Length: 400
Image (cartoon, rainbow, N blue to C red; front, side, top):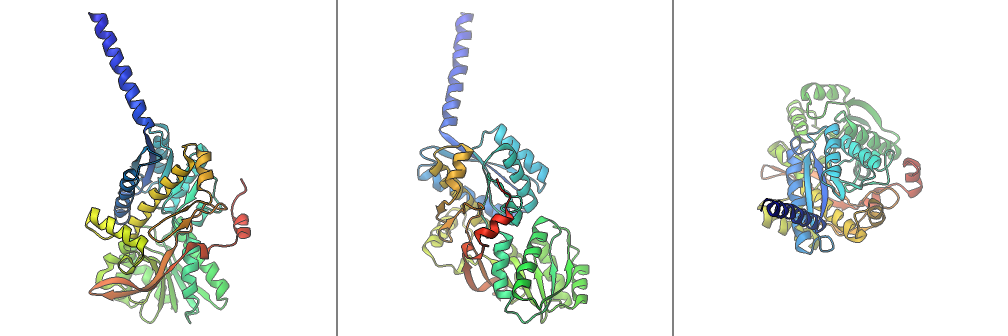
């Protein structure tokens, strides 16, 4: 009797194991990492975006008949924690690829991990140019338009301003340093008459806006480049408005037109800033209408730029997996290079030469409407039109 019981118990364990193995074979897992606890204004809508994408993908048959599962981890805004999360996702969860990240230094840390471990990584949000150029590698692709691309879009407008004396304000880490460097380079090429009279480098998330505003005002610039975002942007605008920093001065600002950063400014929104952003309320295309309708139906809320990034990251990842019909990293790379996919902003392509997607951004000006900040005079700029030549990229990117 005891022997029969043990045999039965053993058989049950074997059957359960086989069932789990069968279940695993019927799923494809993506490991997703982001700074959820540090930057909820962006990452909460971002998570909603990728969750909507997962629903749509599975409703349409998944990944070649297999269910798509996203396993998500919070990096807490720390590169070391992001690498630990990446390691757990690959070694314990057996994910087919990694995706996500927000801060540029974290994106670079996960990209380095992916290169070392030979794991496919689709970077969602990090904007540093290094991720596809100076520190680019064959295992890393990037969705969002880079600092170079957004700077080139802004410079197109900024170069028309009469201002010659410029100051910059940017967070003192990889993203801010990269954005200022490339904007200054591109702007000086178009306008050799420009002087850079002051630079302010507050720590990310910890700006002491009073002294920053005072220092910029003392330099007496005619125009300001701003790269701060989130809570730092709110503090800078409030202090700048109080002290009259923006009066009769042009301001060019990365990301400020994104709803997650523009909305908190409310009636303090400065008018006339040249910005990149996402005017979801004024877009009228079939692709965006379909996304907007689905997003509002699921969440009873309007999308932020993070929503687009999360949605498109997983949609792009799924397209790569479907085309590869494999989880082998080399086959994923081959599938992704040159792949064109649909997006709420129209078709985008992941370039073979540097693994950068051609997703674009909207450029316009800030304005006030009904006590709230909006973007006006907007135009969509395709990323494909704001990238250097292949010959130039080959000089910037390490040889494989």
